[in-house]
Length: 69
Image (tube, rainbow, N blue to C red; front, side, top):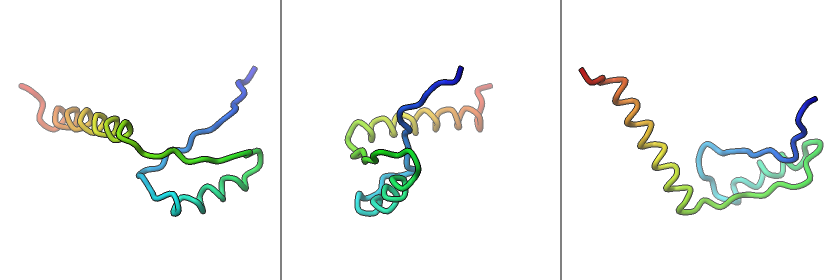
């Protein structure tokens, strides 16, 4: 038996202004089966989360480029 989805989450590659996002949201609304589309405002929590991920990836990249002997 297959799972049934009740929502999809779209993640943008970078923060964009809400008026610039409106055409994208309008296009998604036109897709079959879509009832509503809403935006999520970037806040301090998202900035902290992104910074932590960048830091972790940076450390891992340095370990690959310059392994400890």
